[in-house]
Image (cartoon, rainbow, N blue to C red; front, side, top):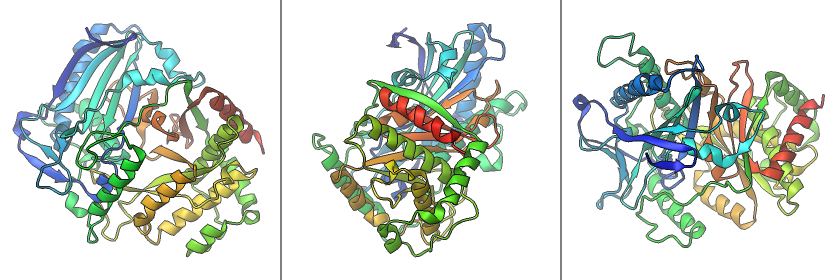
Length: 487
């Protein structure tokens, strides 16, 4: 048995393909929504499941769980054929495509076993070394000529449970799409024993809409993004060669040294408390001049604020203050978030569209707003205003995104990002052995990004995942909990 590290053993590395009856060649274009992520790092998520009987014999896992997961995965790929293919860039094409042929080997799947302490991994009150989570997600292969779309790893924790780690190429699918795939896989895995048919059906909302032609691009945004992104990347990675047509994912290494991974809960009551505080001080925190000049919508005081606005404002300000508190020279920040454009385009895109349909936006704040005494109020107000402005057009500012990004980099302003969504419902994904006891987004360790998900207890709270320097995490913990104690 080969070893990933000292605590992981690989039992099998195989490839799972769609059923032979579904074998036909197909290709899918990459839209401008996809191309922006062409060489971005993979998006990773890990689902942890506990055995209902702690003393479950390992043979149950290898003889029952793994075969069922493999078979249902193959059946799921029949509906998601492009996942079994590769991103390629034919010489006579201006932009890359996703291609699947009957000769493709399928999706890479690793079956592994870990010696790690499962209870420690699940303990949200006990932060752990960031590197620990890297063992449970597989590497996504890429080269100059092709890139895998998805790769999976199933890891056994003897007598305790197992995990499913998924690594996806962001140029093919966004978070909503990858979650749809996992839900479809779990759904077919559950009903395999209930239906005798060899090809069980998916519920309508999990049937992917694969026609990328629905994304209209009359102004040539695809080539604009491809050209500008190439220029931007060449500046960010000056040592990279052959940057124009290669499909190799750029080096965004995980920040693991002296880093801690932790989870934090924001309950429904916490959100109400933050909302009350923000709205009570709303009129005393004016927007900065940049916002007033660019906004066409008067930012009148709302009756309420969304969970998204409250969470992002509170967490981003706590992160900024923690970093600045530990490293006084780091005090300029901006928050960026992605917006699901499916229902916001001139020609709306179906909710089950499978691909990227998100676009990133920077919040119009002063770089020092995040460390201001009333930072949460200021940032919440600006995020709310930005979202209201997007109602006038979600793609209005897309061509200025590259110059904005370059300007922020030049000024030394650190970008705080967000991954995941509290609307994905990841804690409801049951393969037949119960709902997940923990869900992580390992890839947040590749930048200054926090992950969010719906609360596991289903009571309307938010789960926040973070990877920070140990000393920064200690201060974040203090600031986070202290802020929630203020009435």
